[in-house]
Length: 459
Image 1 (tube, one colour):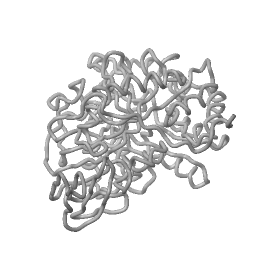
Image 2 (tube, rainbow, N blue to C red; image 1 turned 60 degrees about the vertical axis):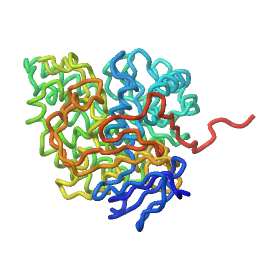
Image 3 (cartoon, one colour; image 1 turned 180 degrees about the horizontal axis):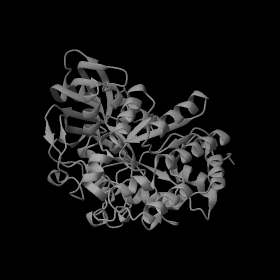
Image 4 (tube, one colour; image 1 turned 180 degrees about the vertical axis):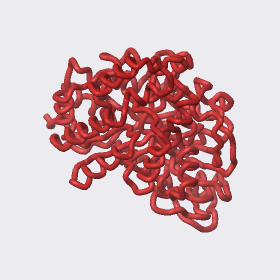
């Protein structure tokens, strides 16, 4: 009789060490053993040689529904499975349906649950006209965090939350223990910079970076952390493109505040003088891609532990929304779910950064951040058997050729990667075999955080 359902042997990547010739064993969809030695009996066993065995990634920032009738969960979670991502945390700014009430949360759970191929958690937000009154009902409905913005892209779909209202929202969230994540660009400063760029007649690739200089980001970052300090709410900057921002976050943590900060994979890979110049609108992201010197600063912050999470901010805009010769007229954001983990592994290895950072920044820390670590985020006994296997097979990335993306374009097309995702397991099920996504729509599950405090008194 088999001891386990599945046993994998290879280099097991844990947050604190690499285990050469390590074993991960699975029973009933859970991690049942992690260690070394002879492979125990199992219904299925794989000696993977030099392959990396990592915890399945948790992508903390995904926009599956930003463009109506475009990507949706059936495609975002397909890309995730192919990329070693076993849980996505989806943003609330869905075109035509802002996730700002318990009813909207449940509607999205039902919608995503019928399509998702891997597991998913959800952000909630507010309608500025409602204020914070629906925050507690969304917590009870199962959101894992809240998202706000100090910049207004659209008054309804992606509204600016003014300072006083942001403070009220933080105060309402604080007793729940959940985190308030904020898009960190100062509205007034950005609009003034945009006006300058337009007045100067600059429309090429340079326009975007000039319209959102680093100061516009840092002003908002300080506001976010000060609001957290004033209210006792965990404050999170959802994407930071400049090294100074990580220094600010570190300073607030040193003062005892819960101040976390996220780095998107595009800020660790792309640079303005080469990639934005080459790609134009296909590299337009808010905040902008910065010069290569700033990219290398971010890697130093990855190395020293200042970065809390690494994510994608994934969104698959149709190509017509990303190819306008007027840089500022393009939609902001890029797809990245299929390639985040291989890109991070490549970048870390090139800079001598231990791969333990991968287990920490794309799995363990996101699980803790969203309070999903009772079941997600680590190769630990009793937790979900979410596993990504990477093999040393150099390849050139092509989003269209893979067949796992709703769009064929990617800012990472043509990049050479030394490690390939060869298998992804979600709760012990093989959802990607290195060539094809095997998980059917609806196989993924909604995951919610454990409550830290009762929200309402028992009657």
